Image (cartoon, rainbow, N blue to C red; front, top):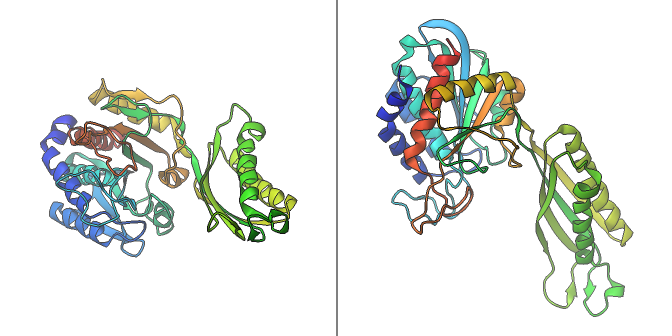
Length: 392
């Protein structure tokens, strides 16, 4: 079976579906239009499906002619709260929302692979379960899908997934693999620094939360430089500080918000503990207080070494010039990690960033982000080849 030829034969359909999905971006765990579109295509292909997360997630099962193991192929469907500035003919019709991370392509590629596999299921051993999930960008759709049984009936034995765009330094058109840690655990923290407001000309009569927040900001950076072993990887980024009204009024409080990333649970524990202790301790030192809310979102994404090697070997056979070994993990987070805590998995990066009309390739999450549609077939071929070869 020529997997590249099958993928190329369905290339126009894949691009068409991606463009239709790109027009209707939806956020988080509420994807009614997106799910309706995916259902309509599955109906067209004659593939049965089940609903999850109040109808905002789907699984579609393709059963082969012989009994065997079950491979899951995961695609995320949600978009971002970004106002699109691509100028594309198929740009977002939902103001303030955009598929700025490529999830529209993930869904279209998975749908195309599902169509091809269903048309050739007489040659398939075992079963393939496609998982179309909401909420990857936060609050996370994988965990509720798992809790509702998406990995059961039939029980999933392996899972694969792929992310497009440009998430690491990968040659254009390549598919990147990495065993073990590939993406970081992702956490969020909010710190409310409480002081006592007053006149800017009389700071001794106030407790200045702006000065306290500055001390906290610098203190948090020392977690990485002085408390985490140099050979370990972690980061703490304060990305928002909000407080104050005008030039001569010391406010009562300041809000800080940021993210923490790590590549092990031990380091993650240290970072959480110290973000809380440093914030509360510094605020108390200067006469104020700090209320810290630290939320753990996604765990470390770990690719099973043996299974990842198997998938890499399959892709090497069909796309020998396009396999790339990612030497270091990236600090972005992915809730694909939840599935891979349950079953052996392989997550891949497809380097397919496209140019904007100004000739610049803008990265994921940018309002001018675009994808090179001529490379989608590589994702489709990867999925169908993996299904046929893994399940032999």
